[in-house]
Amino acid sequence: MPVRLSASPDRLLPADAAVRRIAAELHAAVADAPIVSPHGHVDARLLLDDRPFADPSDLLVTPDHYVLRLLHAHGVPLDALGRGATAADPREVWRAFAAHWHMFAGTPVRVWLEDTLQNVIGLQRHPSAANADDQFDAISAWIAEPASHPRRLFERFRIDVLATTDDPADDLAAHRALAGDATWHGRVIPTFRPDRYLDPSAPGWRAALDDLTAASGTDCGTHAGLVAALEARRAFFRAAGATSTDTGVVEAWAVRADTAELERIHAAARAGDVTASDAAAYRAHMLWELARMSSEDGLVMQLHPGVLRNHHTPTLQRFGPDTGHDLPLPTSYSVPLRELLRDFGTDPGFRLVLFTVDETSFSREIAPLAGFYPSVFAGAPWWFLDSPDGIRRYREAVTDSAGFYKTSGFIDDTRAFLSIPARHDVARRMDAGWLATLVATGRLPEAEAHVIAADLVGALPRQVFRLGD
Image 1 (spheres, rainbow, N blue to C red):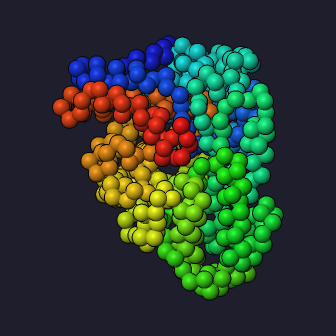
Image 2 (image 1 turned 45 degrees about the horizontal axis):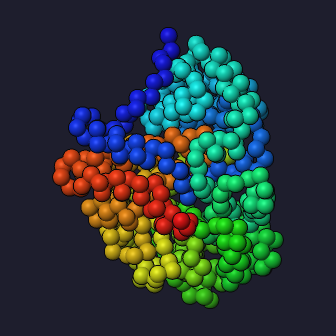
Image 3 (image 1 turned 45 degrees about the vertical axis):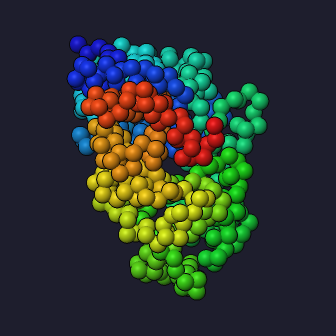
């Protein structure tokens, strides 16, 4: 018999009754606060088109790499989950997911899915092999309801601002159309993501330069041309409402290079002949260059190094990226970013939010950097760390050195639109628990804890990401 879904009102709050009472009051005060989502991957066209979602598997399984990776780890082929060249039957995809529901026990994915299934869609029982078809039909009926269209859900979720992630060559047509739509009253803003243009040894680098040349009208055949094109596109993004950039690199090295040397490397890479050491020097300079641009145009610089993308080459070749095999690496910040912070760390126009998938760096490097440099903020626990326990460890690790007001506020980092409220609720509950612990141990007045809880979900992310009041 499938187990009933029953989200406890005290879920994720501290076990001690006295601390839990304080935490419950703190959470209740912010539970319905508007959602500020300054870092995510939902496509703006989802809200522009406002079409019904396709089917339950396309909604909750196939696009979510958190779900795919664990099912694949238990032997479910990716083509059975809708990621193959041959279209999979959506009902069969849902059956495979439901039959393996127990594999998610204890994971953050289980927490998000339970909340979504019960509180957004209205299901009453856990998925299982026995009820898979009934639940597929129930979710399909829910999808067909006008109240389940993306725009209505945006309002229901109380999303105040939603940032997308966009390539510099993107024409931002969906954003511009939304901004000009008199029937649309939400705020959806682009984020400048220049990763494709940083590494001259990457297979798609030369094609990326051609795309950027076409979008910007500036010839990227030289390094100076590339820099000018990126600057022009940043101005275009700012005009469309962008307040930040987002950069993912393997290492955080940011070191300025000689102009002539950069042009030599650029030319060699255009000819298909760049060495590994030259590529590393070019990448390091480009990271420094992006910081220089942010200090001048005010776009907040988000940096998340330390991810080894597409670990399993055969899976990449067959199924493409974002299929669950991006893996974390040990990551350093203090030495690699020293030159960047020497040049821009005390510049009032510069702001840098540091994320990590190596949680040992929170207390060792990120929090101490945020505890000195006015420009640096400790980014929220992200990706492999955006679990309930990861959020608690983050607060324990960064509060001593950086306090609460040099952190970024929560970011959901998701493509799974329906999971946004569940992810933010997890963060609000875990932060309420940590604040309650400080109150119960005499380290923080309860009234101040309420102020901090409210700031963490509202004033702080707005200030850090320059979103306005």
